[in-house]
Image 1: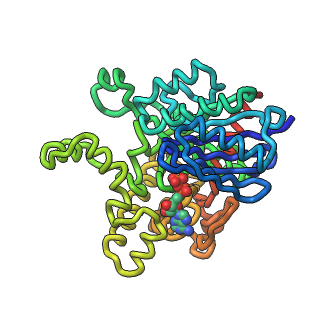
Image 2 (image 1 turned 180 degrees about the vertical axis):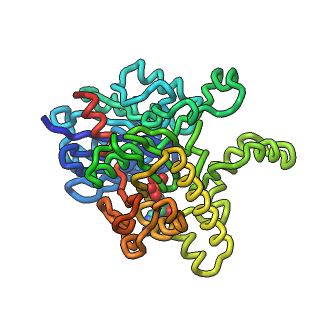
Image 3 (image 1 turned 90 degrees about the vertical axis):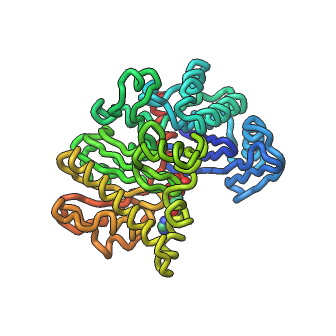
Length: 396
Ligand code: ADP
């Protein structure tokens, strides 16, 4: 039987997709539908013919999925129920309802919808994508894979916020954690690279992309993670503040007269590296720093400082650490971030070898010196492959 899975990540104005061959781990085709609901939209499809782009208005996700179907039909590869073993959907918020992947039916759709209060920017567009894809591929099983599921093993001490517990329960306020698909994939890949069972290892995974999170993984289970109720908490990110004193919010309301929505935009979209130095892409931040821009210099110092603090905290939570794995756009490419965030931790057995670190590897690569107590690695993530694998595993 074929093991091809179409993996879909549906956002409010875009649908990203990838056709994954689960056996080889290769992406056979991929594409993106963009500017849904705007005056002009586009779909770019990369398949056996190379790249094809269609430009036309795309009023909603249904039309977007129809165009994806048409591009597969016209430019390949063939995509019907005989080759498609599943459609896998990335869903950001599964709350404490989904501790693993779920076969999508009307009940699962209703549960994803009910979790929308916790992820108003994510779950509704995921649902629009799921519904459109179920219409487009009615004969294939659809599987939802949640960013939060891997973190459902967090102990109560890690997921409970120290607030009035009646309020917390009533409004489902707790740490959920995100990027779980990536943290799971990278922790397993790290174990595989070390040639040891993941059950025997304590690993800190640093997923550093536009969004960024750290996870402490004990024996293959997430036991602490930096994102919280929403993906705003934790590390410094491209446009998100990460940790701040919650009183900043009341202060801005009372003193600056800002509304809740203003502050939401400030902390989610105008903070992080953007707020600190006016740039979100780490390459631009480094270039500005090298050109003598002091705001960029401070932004990097804040970024490294926060990251190092999390490594130290998770070291303490885990008791001992076998490996630290860097992943995602910044983790895989930024040698400066890797070097500076772990600098001075030799007493903890953590060190980065300058020569080994000077790489942007496409495969898992050790960057700590030989004999180091903690193995530091760069492990490229592959969330699409992990979603595809989980879909196939669920379907047995
Ligand atoms: P996301 O999936 O969260 O949008 P990615 O994991 O794709 O993000 O990471 C994107 C970020 O990776 C970019 O914004 C940029 O900061 C960083 N990045 C990509 N390539 C490099 C590079 N060569 N050096 C430093 N940072 C890089």
